[in-house]
Figure (cartoon, helix red, strand yellow):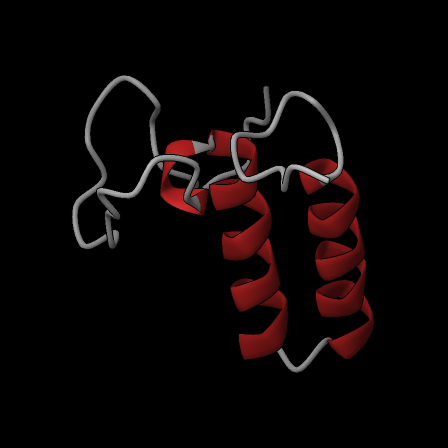
Length: 73
């Protein structure tokens, strides 16, 4: 997994992180959380290219079988 500074530790609950009770929400998937956080950081740093990269990676990730956010089609 990623060891980027600033990412929540998977062994303890994240403080200040919104949690959704709905199954299959991004809050249930660590990779989704990482990509959403990276996008927010890129946006805050005024780096639209990196923010776009994060959105593309998030979309690709959600298309995989590993993501609970995956939409049944």
